[in-house]
Image 1 (cartoon, rainbow, N blue to C red):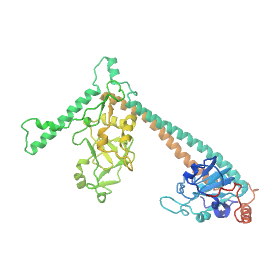
Image 2 (cartoon, rainbow, N blue to C red):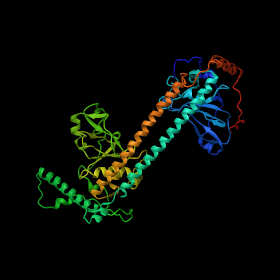
Image 3 (tube, helix red, strand yellow):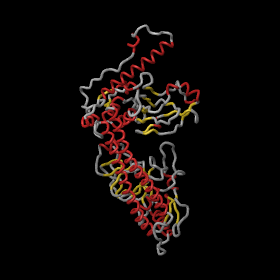
Image 4 (tube, rainbow, N blue to C red):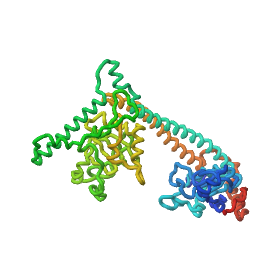
Length: 506
């Protein structure tokens, strides 16, 4: 709030201007309210919290949060005006504005107070009544207050309508993005490879053939790696019995699964990934201790680097080159799939080509496919956009205190897999459609920022005396303040409200 007092205005404090009716409020817990459901609004720190069958007040009042209000957020309201019958709990201060002055004027002024010197607490800030009374307020002439209240209500209501429209657009864009991803992973976004091949009278590789080819490649790499180990240990095999140690992916029963588009197939993730390094979770505390975290060196990526289908650059944690060598098994490479294991479980992104040297942390799972693009990007779309897959994740990741994804759960998930060429065309279409949605979303974000700045400017002008014209014939604010004090002095103790007598507690 400005420290310069406009001409004709004066200063005072909350305790000097308002009647404080906190002694009349009464909290009722949710269980008791459930047995007393009525048509009277029940108010708390930031707004209506329910309904009740009786009222404490029947007038226009200003409620200012006592605890739980966003005191340090300059863009959020801390006070609100109520009218008519009401019940107020002990999380909101109750202020009665001086007679003849508009409550909305005071509400707008209370929203822009710098509350930091007056609140206490750490996680849940509290505004004690004693400190609230000390909050300074500006007092303009009464008629100017009315002009200001009318102008502010008009300007800010229009801004609120604009923000609501932007929020509706954002919600529609979110729904559009979800529908694009859903259509993609259900084979409805682009023509299937089967239909294109049939129209052109050409052959194509169905997903089943792709899967068989990848199974074969997976075994070949396993045999190559195992043979290398045996030779290194000077245990060269005399026959092929050692090959039986390769664990083949289990057969999948698809009889009860939804029908897939032509050319698609159901699979688990295991046949598509490296045998030894295909799936790995980040190192735990025994391998990467907190005291080894540094501010420079090789970056360690966490769930903060993963957003839906977007890799977020930067890292707060780094390790030395020596420690990075010890954690070589947890290296990140281009086209790796990163999956969040906790927090927002199952969010996925693909590692970009220019990642450089990096490791990943305990709350991240890394998946490395046998082949690169487009398979990792398709699985990013699949894990983010398929209700079929997301339902499986939600059903299996329910932990005791929080959801958590592990290798066993990921290995058990069933995925629909289209042909490679179809994956590529699908990803191109997804990128095109989501890029348009992204541009529109950014326009909305910029507009939201502008409305916030305009709101702050309007309030600033209002309380600098620049929003409406000043009238030299207005009664001076000093006389208004003197009359307010006289009225306050005449009310001792706090006058009774118009509300009916509250039912005595049993």
